[in-house]
Image 1: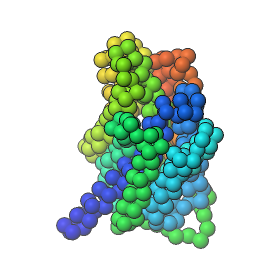
Image 2: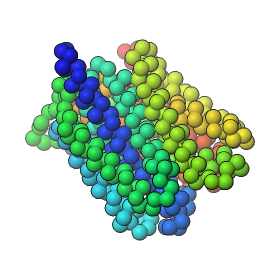
Image 3: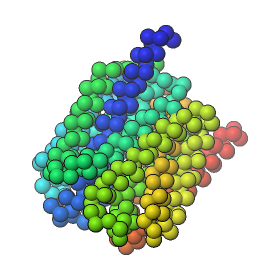
Image 4: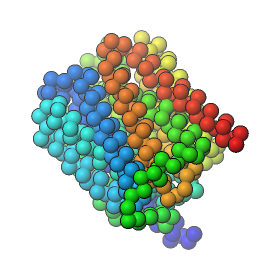
Length: 398
């Protein structure tokens, strides 16, 4: 590879990774206004959780649509990403300025989630198109940016506490539009294999599950997804339970700390990508899932002391996400390049359906269980590790 080609690749990867950060601010934009919505729309904690579930269900529907129609592999990934980011920006704006209650808000959050299906898995496909042999490293960067993007609305809320919530939520739309233009400008990588076909191949994505290595990676990813988004949804409430005895200005402090807890995972994703280059994606993924499972178990025992509880949440924020990129890297390495987009979309669809159930279960029981609600997240890491290990053992015996 020439020096010019290396510079072009580095520039393209930088643009894609930053665009992932900007585009995924749409995901938790409404959560940054949770306190305002609870007051203005007369919502409870469970209702705020259901708004997040609406995003997840929209994402599930969008990724399933991409998988079943093979759109993720039939058209240029940069175009799919750009159109999705722009449409998501408009859906998010409509939520901020047109929604007047829970029903309209949930419908528009569903639409936003549907559009996010063209950002997250398609962003992974774009990266693989540029660096297919270094997927673990650069997907670590990509998921790191998704993590920081997820927490960014909390930071916007914290640095602009006097802004109306509508304006805070609208910032995410502006960032998503920038992401759409940037990815459209950078285009496809030299290793992208877009197959333009005359009709959808409805069975291509499901065929990935005939591969034992793909099943192992998918099983670990599904266990990870039971925990991840439920944890992110619970972070502001867990922080409030830890800090309520020590801070008077809880909403602002919780906004800042929520961003920090979630965003630390972005740093660990990047570190996880580097470790995967040395030790392998499987080692990093299983270590991360094991440590986050331990935090599910021990966190309720840490809440009697604010410093201990905060430390536990920050450690949890670090270890809860690096396995996502590495399980995805293992999945892409196990299947033919021609179905990467569709197979990742299908894997994401199933994973986010699982996350919707855990969000609903956790947010509906936090008032009754308090900090012990984190025990409801433990089955994800535990069963994910057991299933992935079983498939890997089967692969070795074949």
